Length: 414
Image 1 (cartoon, one colour):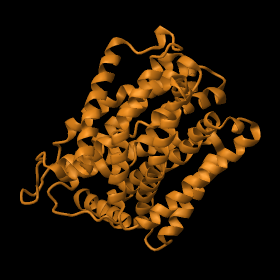
Image 2 (tube, rainbow, N blue to C red):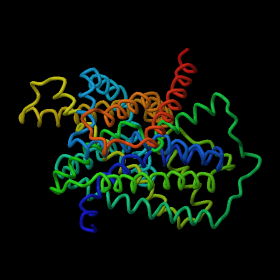
Image 3 (spheres, rainbow, N blue to C red):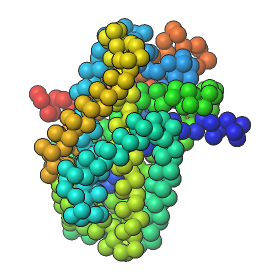
Image 4 (spheres, helix red, strand yellow):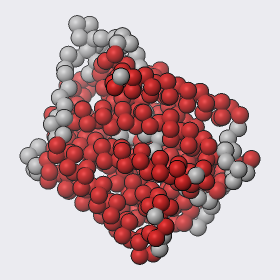
């Protein structure tokens, strides 16, 4: 069993690398910095309500031997078109948002070493080297190392901050008021907590890639163990970053900059002023590992997912020659458009992040429902389908996510 576990471990860790990013470093930290520990319940509830829709990714892949994209195809070609439209509508902004935060951190750490555009190009080059040259095997190994470093450094930082205690300045401390602004902030957090539901599709493809790499097809129980380790880890880390925001920033009176590098500098200085200058290296490692892991997995995932989508929608692309073309086409388009968005919003990181997270929140009920339909389809044997408790939780999640999405659309556009 031990040997099998190590053969299975990987897709859940990569999933965690994709999930632990802006939602944790920026949004969870902002939640703690703005409202102390008041939004802990929000983080836990959102993680619970979204759990089934992420779990359906590896469940469907193991049960069917195919990705969720093909599960959508079984509903009708309309579902693939819808997924394609939702992906195109969000992917460039999401890539730009996570990359902007990563570049902001690098610019803060290394100061004037490179320009904003220079850091973007270097970041994209390093990620492409891993994804295009190393492929899944390199991604699998590097993500395990990054997540280990991220987890250890974050936990050390939380322990150090806890030792200092929770001493907010009452003059600057504020509470969540259910005002329009606070609700919009809550929706932005929920949009990527623990991540956008899109990555359930990515997870199904990483599961199949792992099977292809190792030649071992895990049982459903083994695959879900791998997923649950990653999911539990992302929840714990979200609470860790919220705690860091509360312990180090709540009641400080600091207004965070919308510029990525300036935000990162404020982020680091508040930690070091609270914990001590020795904590800079630990916080810098945690922040860099967090955002590099997300940038890397997003660059891997979108081209990986859009290739089979393209082949389903345009059958003439379903050949070996087109395989290579689609790989390069989607990764090139993704990075070029993301680069253009990043340069346009180079001084408005917070706005870019809020746009990306809000888009993900609005699309969450649609993708969640499609995942539910796929995993309860007639091609899935009863023993692989979710049980009654999971189905009930799914419907509760869909109702809550839909209600908030409708509210958000009504407030913003009506």
